[in-house]
Length: 266
Ligand code: SAH
Image (tube, rainbow, N blue to C red; front, side):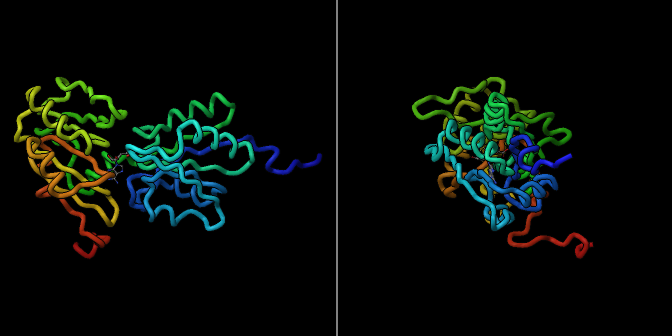
C-alpha cells in the first residue's frame, strides 16, 4: 500500500482561535499549541504584541485588522482569504482577540467556511468582559450586589443610532458590560439614567486590560462620559456599569509591570 503525502490526505481546515484579552499567559493550552504549529496566521488588531511574538518566525502573518470606524480588510475578503489558504493545504490559524464568538464575527467566518466545505474548529478564548474585569478587581457577579451580567456592544454602523433595550438594561441588580462603548458613552449614560438606573451607579473603564499597558478608572454612571474624556481613554476599552465596580477599591490586585509572586507574599 502506497502512502499518500500528508497534504493530500488532510482535508483543508481552519482553526478559529481566541487569543484572549492580551496577556499571553491567558491563552488556552490549545490556542498556544495551534499558534506554535501554524503555517499562516490571519490576525486582528486586538491580538497583543506579546501574543504575536509566539507565532513561529517562519509562519506567514496576514493582518485582517478592524477598528471601529475603518475596516482594513472587508469581511468578505477575510472569508475568501481563509478559504483559499485552507485549500492551499497550509495549517491556518485565524487568531482573534478575546473569544471568537463574542463580538468577533467568528461565527460569520465559520458559516462561510461551512458553506464552502472547509472544516474548522473553534477554540474559545477569555473574552474581554472576563479578563479585563478580573485584572481590574471587578467581579461580574457578587452575592448581594449583582445577580447576573449582560454584555452588549456600543458600536453601530456610522450614521446609525445606538438602539439597545434600555429598559431591560437599566437594572440596578445586574452588571452591564459594554464592548466598543467609547464613541456612544454619552448616549449610554443618558439612556440608562433616563430609564431608571441611579446616576450614582458605579462605572468603570478598563483600557488594554491584562496587558502591561492596562489602565482603569472609575466614576459614577452620570460622570462616566466626562471621566473618559478627561482621562483620554482610547480603544480597546471596556465599560463596566454596576454596583460590583465599587469592589475594585478592595480587589484591584494587578501590580503594573510585574507578575506578582503569590508565594512570596505567603
Ligand atoms: N472578541 C473580543 C471582542 C471584540 S470587540 C472578546 O471576546 O473580547 C472589540 C472590543 O472588545 C473593544 O473595543 C473593547 O471594548 C473590548 N476589548 C477587547 N480586548 C480588550 C482589552 N484588552 N481591554 C479592554 N477592552 C478590550
